[in-house]
Image 1 (cartoon, rainbow, N blue to C red):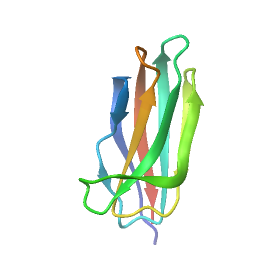
Image 2: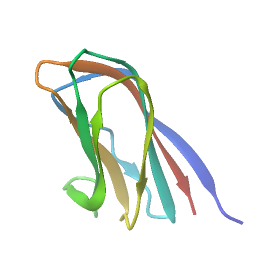
Image 3: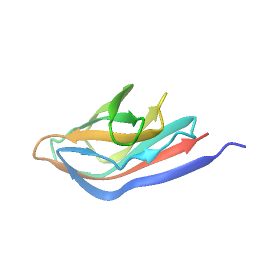
Image 4: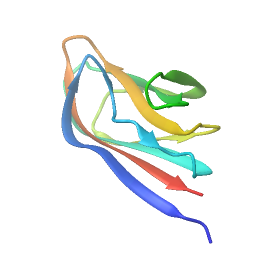
Length: 110
């Protein structure tokens, strides 16, 4: 029987500049989807980001090909993450001087 788990990493959090979610241990999972719900975003702001993986939850590297760009309005977005290691997080950056309010979750299945 497969296991399924959803974890909310940030809820209604205001972000600006470069930011990263809390890391989450995902070694047991076969699949991961990062959901990003943008509640509010400043006019003319854009968010770009990438999934990052880690062997120890301390040192992080970008997960090749698992990135998004161009989020510029409220709504729901997702990023399917392939071939991740024991730890997973989202790192993103919003246009300098701008901010957004977001909820970020990881859904795991394995």
